[in-house]
Figure 1 (tube, rainbow, N blue to C red):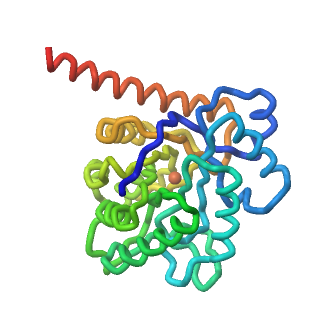
Figure 2 (cartoon, protein in one colour):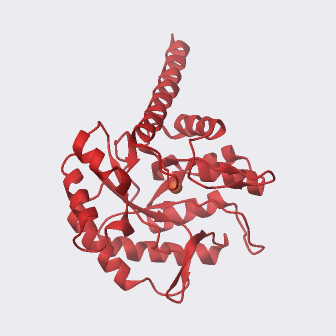
Length: 286
Ligand SMILES: [Fe+2]
């Protein structure tokens, strides 16, 4: 039991816009994260590209439609397509969001948060266990950003995430930007969030940009990572050590060079943060 974190370094998202450039120029990339839903249909260019890049670099599959928090049964058709993709690609990580996005077989376009209750912990953990049985591997669940909360919630979000991960025996994909955005929107301290998540469950980070709407923040994933999110990344590195990290850019996707530079910045920050940490320790023992 427990989650074995991989040593992957810093990756980027695999986007159709960059397919030709990636295949043609083969820039140095540690790993790629592909949105599972774009590759579920058999055949076609996306799958051919995925199979090609897979030969050179590790690939993670990141889903948006598992709807792990929904009330009805799991979507069998989706699960079997995902299982087939996992068998074909042999991803280093399979992840999806801790939320619900469908009801009664209909999918919404948003990732809605759950009420943080005992009942929801048991419900979601049971469904994650089913998915892991089906895929024959552990998955990571990602914290979503939220703008509303439920009166029924009986625990903070970080306790909810921790308890589900422990109960289901899965890993956690911590989206650092989402913690920051939700912290601002709900008025909690992001450091309390980090302190509440056990290091041995953390398998991956997402870093992203957001939009400042004045009185609240929108998790837009369409801009460079802003300074406060970099600062929270530093705090997360100090708490959890080296974690595979990915700069997520879902909208207004920039040229590949921009994405690579942002990922390089994350790598640089990791080096500075952890090496400075080591220096301090070295000084302390001398
Ligand atoms: Fe994310």
